[in-house]
Length: 289
Image (cartoon, rainbow, N blue to C red; front, top):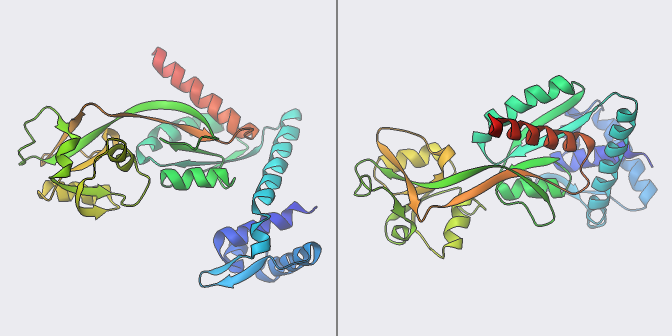
């Protein structure tokens, strides 16, 4: 079975068009079209269908996608294992993170990692918690930094973070030591990342609180501006809160903590296992110091 053809098919589906897939690879549009046509001849049914976003999988192709991604993952696993036997240590590692605050930690360790494994190529992407877990589940990504992995994933905790309230420096809550989540039932609430599986939405749902949501934004900087202007209160991870003179960052009552960690599927590739081991070793070293 020619896995290169299947890999190109996934590139077309993930990018939404044959031209975009060609731009990402060393193939021409006509070359990819011929390969897809050959694949359709081999399997006996169409694989692509045009839609309003470009091209997508046919119903028959949809039934194959998980198997195709597993096939390519296994091929990568075998390639890395053969290279490891030969002492070459090659591979590709795609890392996603839901936290921009994790970039310094990740990049610092990636620098050290590639010094030891210079032939392992690394891609780092940002996304929402649920998007990243879905990408890992579909083998579009090797590993992700999230606070809520799916039950079938391996999870290696990196750090603990506290959830905090962000209030205006002129509000009646600015002089308090802590803020109760219950006030969000009445006070105007600024929802960051609305309709997403965010840490704050899970926190409020777990506490059984339906906030008085008056404003929404997908930009934490905009949320802080709204708070400073006196429009309302927001809840966010402490590491993502922006220190400013016109706002106050206050712990919640009772304290609310969450764990941030590396998540991946069972039976990860060698490069993924190496990176996890490298991160764990680095975290242990920092704890000793």
